Image (cartoon, rainbow, N blue to C red):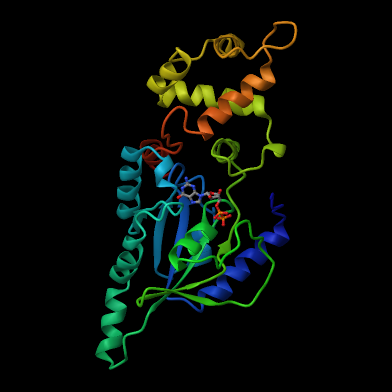
Amino acid sequence: MTIQWFPGHMAKAKREVQEKLKLVDIVFELVDARLPLSSRNPMIDEVIQQKPRLILLNKADMADESETKKWIEYFSNKGFKAVAVNSFQGKGLQQVTKAAQEILADKWARMRAKGMKNRAIRAMIVGIPNVGKSTLINRLAKRNVAKTGNTPGVTKAQQWVKVGKELELLDTPGILWPKFEDPEVGLKLALTGAIKDAIINMEDLAVYALNFLSTHYPEQMRERYGIDSVDEEIVKTFDHIGRLRNVLGAGGEIDYDRVSELIVRDIRNLELGKLTFDFVEEELEKETVEN
Ligand code: GDP
């Protein structure tokens, strides 16, 4: 499913999330652990404002573990608690309630001081399409309550789902748009499969992927393709991989479309191992330049 994000849709999506915000104590901002910044909504701070927030780095099973640790620290330095989870297998989810309780500890203590009774924390999940919102809701609820592949703007009655005694979750997530003004963000989202192939030029994506691998993961590249950098003439790198993997057309020539697809598929299927596509060091450098 591809969502067409027109300006009107974005405004509506923002409104819908802000309506639901009134119902909850805390927001779980879901991002992809492989690209914790590129998979964020660019206006998230403006949308959520002062509402307490827990960042969940989902799909941690597919990300480079050492980079995930750096991202958790990065968010912590910005004042946000972040937790790595794998919604698919339900790993790390026990930490979610605990982290939410820690974030809300002061507020709950104030409530108790006023004589109010303890109640479950109310939460909602927000994130861009494909980041795993429905999977997480279903895992936390321990049953199928959220449909995967849901669309923004389709309003239905809100229901609370209980997650143990201490947490209640809205069964419909808030869906927000990704940051598509930056072409590199688009390429990273495409490489992780968050954007439909129909709107991507596979060859451009494969060129980006090869350059990315040679810069950040040369060892993994060597293991898979026998080379750890791209040739100055990128077509020679395609030729090499095409011959290595026998991706030839009927006349024995290299089939570049299929080589491109193979490289992208290899990355998505973790054939080069667990990779992360956003780097804390690069982000901190950018932030230093901007300030
Ligand atoms: P939504 O659009 O945000 O609701 O995303 P979905 O819940 O539909 O998930 C998108 C895809 O990511 C599905 O194929 C899920 O199976 C997969 N997925 C979700 N969470 C995880 C995870 O933690 N690990 C892995 N490996 N896959 C996940």
